[in-house]
Length: 198
View 1: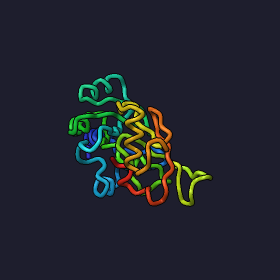
View 2: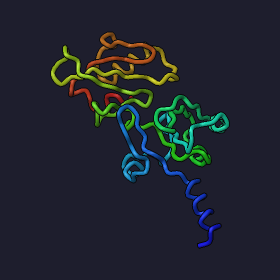
View 3: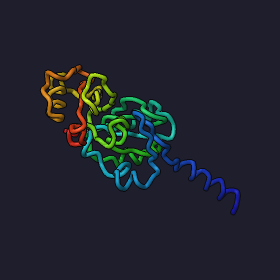
């Protein structure tokens, strides 16, 4: 093989940078694993089921990169893992996002990242992150759970509290809520995935 061909091959390889593992909320997932694309559906499909996506890039985003994403209606919210950004994205089609030269991977912000390992295999709301701890005064097996909301959810504290109360079948006044989070105690029978998915 000629030196030119080798150089060209190396350039092509560097341009096709593979995604790297993503660590969020104590969860580490590798976008290169076939199981993520198959069974979990991460990195494939559209964003119809969520208004939040993860975008992983070759390098950290520049202003020009952010402007390009903004033109695609992507609002970059925060860096959540190495070269991986949490973004608000109202449209459903991710194809144009994935085709950007600086993007190595893009997918819905799935429950695999959202839920603390302490609550697995439960799922959480696509507008929230759930973390858990054991509360000394709680019934045996119960967990105190903080459901933390995205900053741009656009709902009032009362609306958020009522939605969580309905999902876990408790009365809203028993929950401690703010515009950013709701704290509740879940018994083992109420930690099923459907309880937090509304």
